[in-house]
Length: 238
Picture 1 (cartoon, rainbow, N blue to C red):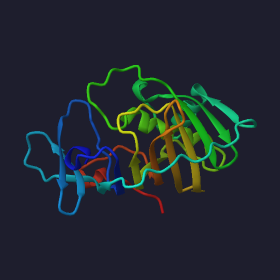
Picture 2 (cartoon, one colour; picture 1 turned 60 degrees about the horizontal axis):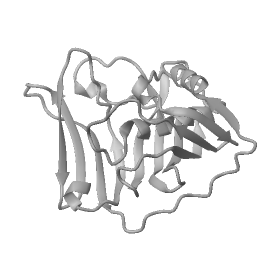
Picture 3 (tube, one colour; picture 1 turned 90 degrees about the horizontal axis):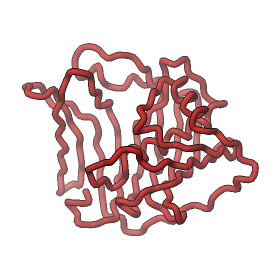
Picture 4 (cartoon, rainbow, N blue to C red; picture 1 turned 60 degrees about the vertical axis):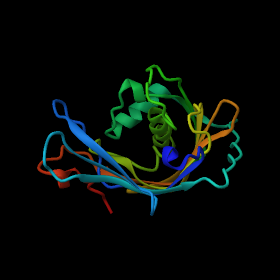
């Protein structure tokens, strides 16, 4: 979207994730990103490499130039915050069926401030990335990890269920290419089957790098899919 529009500030809207992009050992896939400039729609597809299979749609969104960059919200008081270290946090994610690789374990600690607010300190990357990302995907993903510390007492999992993001109302890139050092998490709604939250990624000076708002997480059954591409769709609990 940045390359096409020629603008640094970009806002992604109504990003829906329909199915995960599963990378199985020993199998290769090819991906297709289709951008429609007339209606400003971006779609992500995949299919097995060197096959005549139909393209499977994984995600769709719209985009536009970010006209008015948002300001970061005032930081919550951390004096009475409970500190959750990296080891304890990733025990929580594993208990929720999510085993993160080393490159994605980017949270140093999370400060839990009440029932709805948390702040995670992010670690510098230990892996060199050749691609110039607008927002480092390992940091973007790690920004969600602190959510498990925040809602640990409100939701439970048997290890076969977890919460995965299925929709973003807005993704606002304020400083593309900047490295966030902290993420502020605000939970707007939580239940055993659904979460709604906002994430503010901040740089070392407290300036907003990106805001992800209206992020909806759904309880998803974590089991090995079988059969064709339709079996890779999320099994969402109501």
